[in-house]
Amino acid sequence: MAWFKRSKKSIEQQTPPDERRVKTEGLWTKCVHCRAIVWKKDLESNLHVCPKCQHHFRINAKQRLELLLDGRWVERDAGLGSIDPLHFADTRPYGERLKENQKKLGMKDAILTAEGLLNGRPVICCSMEFRFIGGSMGAVVGEKVTRAAERAMENKVPLVIVSCSGGARMMEGTISLMQLVKVSAALARLDEVRLPYISVLTDPTTGGVTASYAMLGDLNIAEPGALIGFAGPRVIEQTIRQKLPEGFQTSEFLLEHGFLDAVVHRKDLKAYIANALDCMVG
Ligand SMILES: [Zn+2]
Image 1 (cartoon, rainbow, N blue to C red):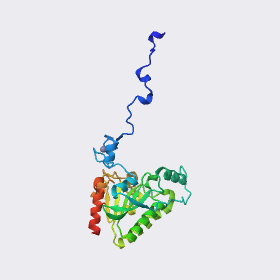
Image 2: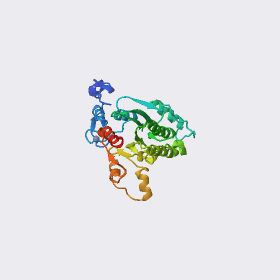
Image 3: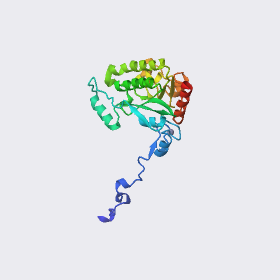
Image 4: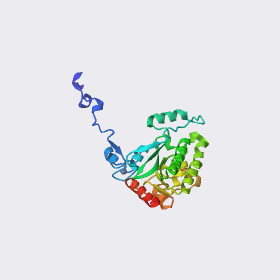
């Protein structure tokens, strides 16, 4: 019975599925904080800070170096990689996870060390990569930070470390925890020769990294709204059996309670560090 059957295809069916919508995918992104729809190009030109609410999006290690250093820099200790000393496996073998991250991100571990200029002043700058196993600190990150401090001493230049980390890398067990001590000792030597170390804490800086070099700067500064802490809020709540105050473990909360020296907007970060080094070194 053809008279009640639609013999022609509807407009929708005539158009192939992938042409039905205007192709905007990948051009826009939603701000996780204010939920505004932001054009990705706008976000990039605004240093990955939401133009509506100033939420600081996470940026990668390389973008961070580009933000802080003048033009070119020389990467140091790029060849250091973990040997998976415990042959650790959880849901997957750690060695496999390492290889996959190294291939995907084009770096051996979760930190970059650069020798470059910051507003014309030679510095050693380390920048952590969160995408590499949550920016966790194992033997390689610990060794690179230690070497960066030693290199700063050799060159007699200031050290800047930008942290972005979930903490110690538990796949390396005690070896990852030993890094806290090693790095702290190297920073103490840097302090003895009176060279400045500026620590920049970005979202998130937690666990063993907070418990060692992130909080050991002559100046500890953070980006707005960053999560900074040792244990997560849920663990603390369960331990102390109390509700935590609002904004607990944010940069602003920590500044108010004397754990940080300043909270600095990303657009002012380079100038702020340069100015601080001018005051410290002259
Ligand atoms: Zn926003």
